[in-house]
Length: 81
Image (cartoon, rainbow, N blue to C red):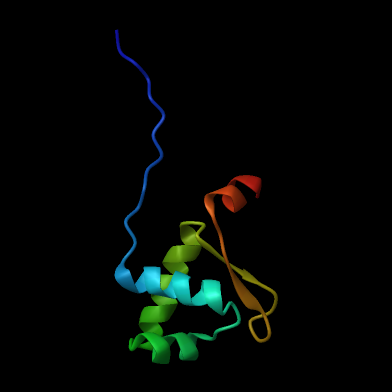
């Protein structure tokens, strides 16, 4: 007999993605340019990581492109949406 187990797939984030989440957790209004300067990476690297984080439901943009902010999502937030 086989047992069925429910396992959540965990995706290992890059160090850059983890740093972006941490920075946005503390300052959700940060821009791509500000993140780029803070982390010492290109703006394209930040954009690529933001897109990945959004696709993994770890990050959500709230409001307009100019004047909005980033919301770092926890597992509880993702389940509620």
